[in-house]
Image 1 (cartoon, one colour):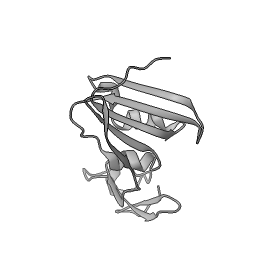
Image 2: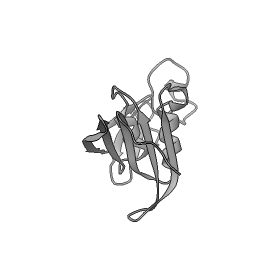
Image 3: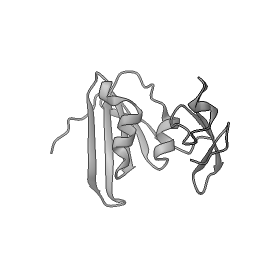
Image 4: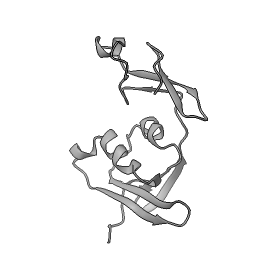
Length: 137
């Protein structure tokens, strides 16, 4: 399988196997007009299996907090003029807004037009809670 190298764009590498499609959907890449390559279950000497997501773009404006919420161990490589311009590692965001919906049917977010906001309450267990009803995610 051959995937062309990027001239300008972003590569999400070392994505835990299975999380590539979640990131694809979260970033709404199905409606993105640029080139996107999602490689699932690629062989990895470090991880066994991994996913890789390559996105061709001129301007980098993806919500990395949302990406980190799904997989905070992946590597973000920013490519400019065919060269690695920047490498970033992500960490769990302290707060996320409108990334996931509250599962509590009685929560105000399911009845009013308010943002779905969750705060990180346990970094080790990657636990977030709704700021309105305290439901755990």
